[in-house]
Image 1 (spheres, helix red, strand yellow):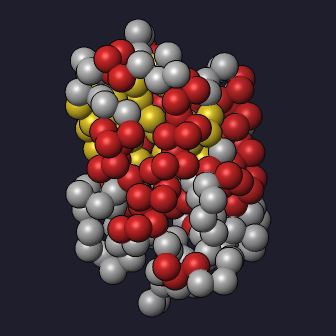
Image 2 (tube, one colour):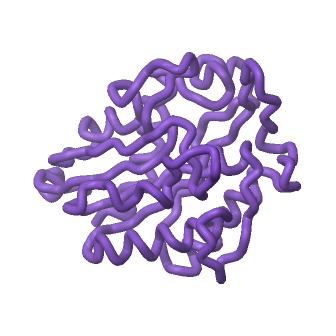
Length: 223
């Protein structure tokens, strides 16, 4: 049974991309409609910090300077829980997978290696949890982004990025919630536009549904 009093003084940092920021499929939206906006209705945290950044990749790239590996040290350093949710932008932008033995911030696994160890050092008493990116079939106006079951230009499907995140999290005994496979929402279902209007980002009711799924999985790792 959930003890609501346990969470009254707790802070959670939610670190991610546009799905954490709260993109509503039109480029609008924001933190007020994100899945993070529903957390305190379900778990009474004292503070929920949203560190979502639209378009942010796990790995570093030449075109931008807002990757997860560049931003993680900017978060509030007093968090009790840190949830890291991303990877779809690495997949659609052809980031090389790399290997769990490396720490090259320009590869997916190298950047995850840096992030996991960096967060562990920065927040030694916090609970760290990762979440895989949900499925995508992005109907972008100009870019021919691959969907989850197509190979990107690096020769990988999204499931390979999912497997890579799970592998490195298991390597370090970090809990990982596999939303790629258990989010309960898919752009490949009939009438998917109700929850995912553009095949990647969520509507307000989509974020609310996603929040309930996340909390259902998250609560196992919070106590």
